[in-house]
Image 1 (tube, one colour):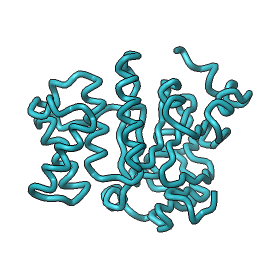
Image 2 (cartoon, rainbow, N blue to C red; image 1 turned 90 degrees about the vertical axis):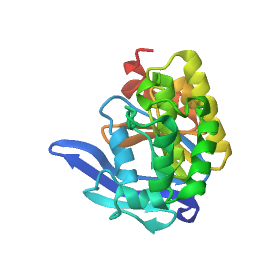
Image 3 (cartoon, rainbow, N blue to C red; image 1 turned 180 degrees about the horizontal axis):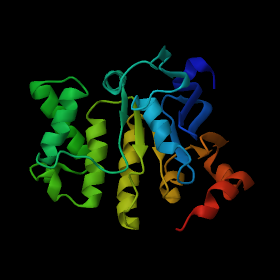
Image 4 (cartoon, one colour; image 1 turned 180 degrees about the vertical axis):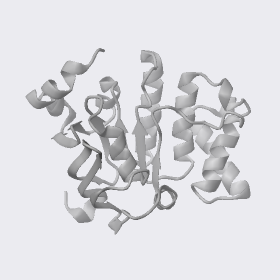
Length: 244
């Protein structure tokens, strides 16, 4: 893939916390419209990578480019307005607000919409994620699956071009994972580029067309999901650590 065709590019991005390296000069590209999965053992640097892309973490070295522009110095809010949306492993809704109010706030703050335009985006996002019937319920009353959907909905309501999904299938039953997979497929079909960190490997293999494996802050495999999972390197650093 040429640099000109990349929506996201990391150019030698490095990050350390004391003696711990979470990104060791990572260079990679993600093209517009791709669905990319990321696997790796705990502590591999997966969530830190998302932090570097979204602006939650500042790199010690290297550059982050989005749609050809250097965004390394931009904060998360600025990157969000450019089209970088993300979820977190542990859903963080505003518990005292309703489901609708949570998504509306994302539309207002992330997509910079107001009035009817913000409300329309919030409602359409609730429909898209299967949450419309819970619109008036407090976020604190939602089940785990519903909170996971709300986490996705809030990110979607910022109108991202790139959506970073961080273990949104974790803790769900097989049936609930299947529901979430269909939501992610719909997001990707709508033209949004998806990068998905997940330990539920079957969710990734049924959704993405490219798989990365991280270990010790490095990309140790990148390519077709089946080939990556079959590689001796990935079996050694990751698959042997899976308990499910």
